[in-house]
Image (cartoon, rainbow, N blue to C red; front, top):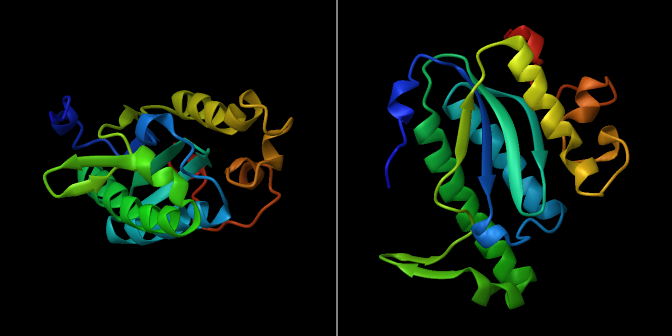
Length: 178
């Protein structure tokens, strides 16, 4: 699998990321799945000296904006994040939604199941305007999906943080970067 010019973005620090569940399946089906993702963000943000600026966790994909405070290690971050969450989500699916297992069988080398698509999309955010556009896109994702009418009502998004309705958690405000 090629890196699609990712090695050219070693000096940049801020990225909009999208990663999708295998075959767009709704594998993120409840609060426990989202807790697995949040805990993983917390761990890998500390490990790679990164901060989340915004996020939305949907049932078949996630979007987030990540800022690396020191060295940009996006490739390693995403590799580790997806590998660990794949394991934990697969274990949880096996325990709670065993009927989904046949849909995620994927036998290749030592791999037996697949939670995430292999690739992820990354967009380098080079300005405040571009960052604000991506944050708006992230926060309106649940509205476009028909899950809520107001972005701040969706519990698995940073929209409420930006409206001052939730504590800081593990987020950094984008204005602290741009």
